[in-house]
Image (cartoon, rainbow, N blue to C red; front, side, top):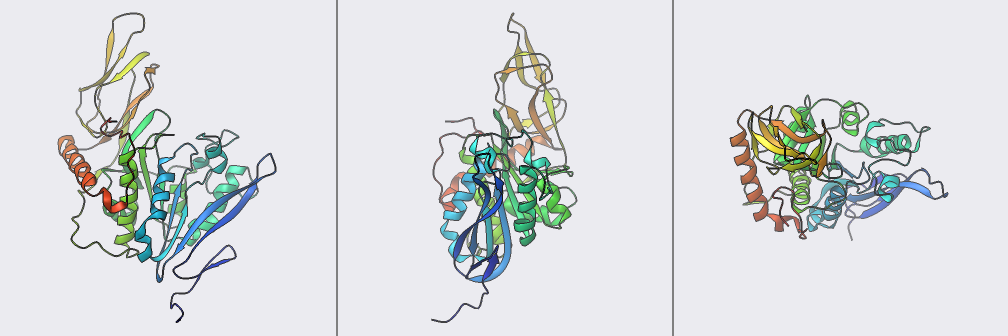
Length: 358
């Protein structure tokens, strides 16, 4: 049998032949029980040469949509035609994931500890190992996130404002909304930019909950980026999804008082200045104080908490010149997604935060 012309991929002392898979553990420390903490990297090495893409999820340990997205990508038949190499980490923050917590056991946010320190805290060592062993080997990264507990996000990308390659790949990903953001000190996205690696940060849904739309957009978007880069063959006869809505900035509307919170509009809807988005009810009386929009755009995030204090962030708006046009694009994108779910070998999930439907 003739040998493959594609060289093996060498990773942390392991040799992965063309067309093969391997799971490699990168040790980063120990739990207090003495058990080893490690990053498990799933490596899929294509039969033909190409780029190296890294996929990460659960940098925050309670954000599970990305874990499911990567699980589905790894199980996809599409990878049989892979060119290049995929480095996939379904769970980056293993200690937090085990506790179903956003934060590390020392209550620190891993996504504020990059680039990390190999002799620092557990989180710093995880950050350093991820950058040096995985990101340094990759040509680009897609990092999957969700909103916090009881705070849902419309499926969206966040990319660094000054990164033209990330913007090109965001076009290919085709999420409903792409937010152009500045650097965030200590974040994985900013460390990628400093290393010259394009990074797409995907947000969708909320913590500790799987939802259909976010998972579908994540799987399809990652595969579309792989096709754009020649890592997967192009799909003939398939129409291009609706263009993403680019928002140059965003802001939160906050609760005008404490009480019982009732939202009136779902994610993805157009928002106009002065519009009532919801209201806060006085728990000791009949007063209902409206939450009104101070900016126009698209609703990209919302709290699902039933009670709020004055000043709590309740509605996240991605600013856009023509909100109605943006809403039409998002509705059209949602319709396109439902028609093409079979392309990503979907498994139904019984909750969709975009339509608030069960």
